[in-house]
Length: 160
Image (cartoon, rainbow, N blue to C red):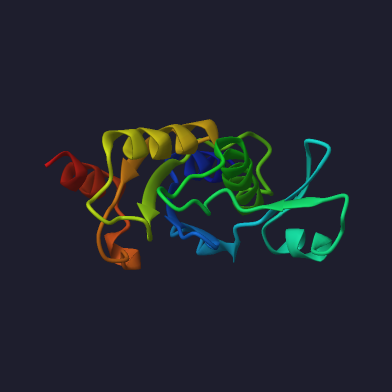
């Protein structure tokens, strides 16, 4: 049990964000959340997130919101993006008795023309922290192979 608890706190999640998809991968457990970036909302309450939200398509009382669909930047709806990422993290650690606080490597996969502005970097950091992340590194570049998902090396590359 203690080993499992220690693993939750030591976990590093690799979060890839596309306009229409969110992938969160835990290399230590090989668990993965890889679903559409839709959230179903009725009267301000979130009913479902990810692929489960698709079942509300066509329901006039429910709004389907994609928080990453914006013409100028990757995060278009902060609150919904936060809830979607929280949902993904909770699903990965559903067996845990305590709230996990993993390190997160965020990798925006689109809307990178000209690089990320300081505002976009801060928004990504705040998104990860508010979703339960303990520390955040932002990776811009090719997709990381499993062996390259090392928080400290990605953080060092970001600082250089």
